[in-house]
Length: 186
Image (cartoon, rainbow, N blue to C red; front, side, top):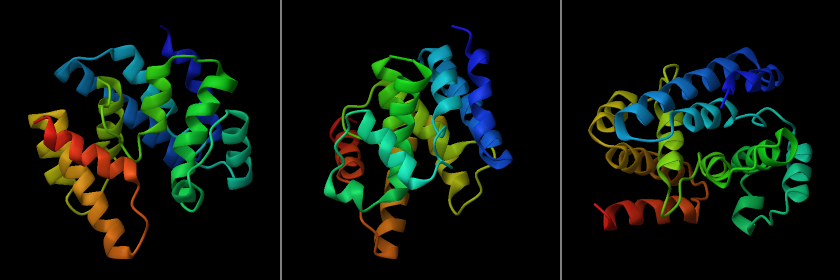
């Protein structure tokens, strides 16, 4: 698979978001090599995971609707989650990459979910720990990610849930399910 032919889709992004997408792809490849995974799929999903991040909300909703996705009430009230859903649909329906694992890796890169594939874990954690990320506890998350994907994910999910609850924001049931799934399967 020649992932370079998809680089032009990053032209729709700001400079920051383009750099972030390239960094996520690089981190996903690193994790794929370290923990086992399809390196090319990891690079491709990493490159395209935020392809609709800077698309206006009305257009994102149209992409989601055209993709046959019915948003839950929580998702409708959480526009920050839309780019993952619209991005997955865009990659499948507009770009033409009809791979369910890539679809799900993009779809759940912000929330995680129970029973994630290896690729889904790689993209979730690569997005969390990419080189330009600079937020409280990033060093701790990166350290956990060096021990195992699941350890890094668990810490990242706890961090995210704590921040959401602290701000009084909604918490995705997918994030809670991912947290419980990881604990049950350690």
